[in-house]
Length: 97
Image (cartoon, rainbow, N blue to C red; front, top):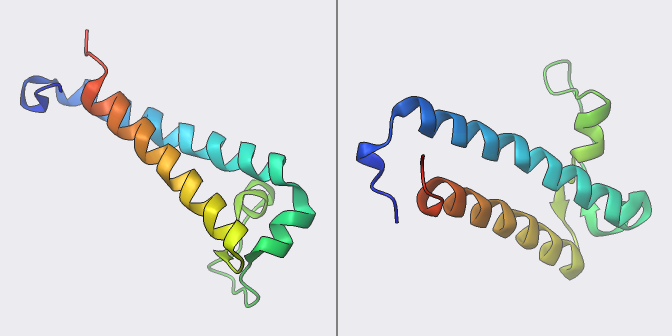
């Protein structure tokens, strides 16, 4: 494990931003793999929208909502587990050069 106290803050911030953007790709790929039909069956989306919580086209595509079936729960846990594994591996264990 890398001692994060010796890592420059700019390098750490860039890795955190990289993980943040990779998480978008995980959500987009999962939405593409599942398809609209299974995503609608396995997840319940928000039904009440106001002016402050509207999303654009990519936001709606990545919006899963909350799981309503066990398949949805497995998909959600898989996505979050993958993002967590990428974050810990890239930030804590991948060597800084």
